[in-house]
Image (cartoon, rainbow, N blue to C red; front, side, top):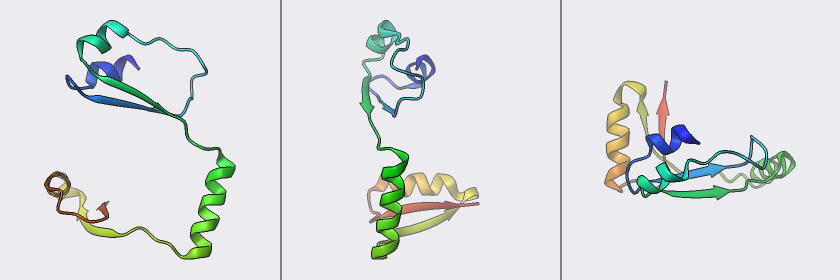
Length: 95
């Protein structure tokens, strides 16, 4: 957590996804306040939930929309495309 808070930009956002370290943990609140960052906890489903989701996708044939793919050596272009907001769907990076 301390590394994430140190790395976040001033006014940035940190998402804590799932709980891997148990119910407790150190949060350097002074640094979080100094960065004026937002910390959001997200609880994800269980492995069984994920498996049921994958089965549902397989059964329905639903697939994500991929707008464009970029090679790894054009990664900067992929980020620029994302920042432009002109995409519809996913942006892929192939390596």
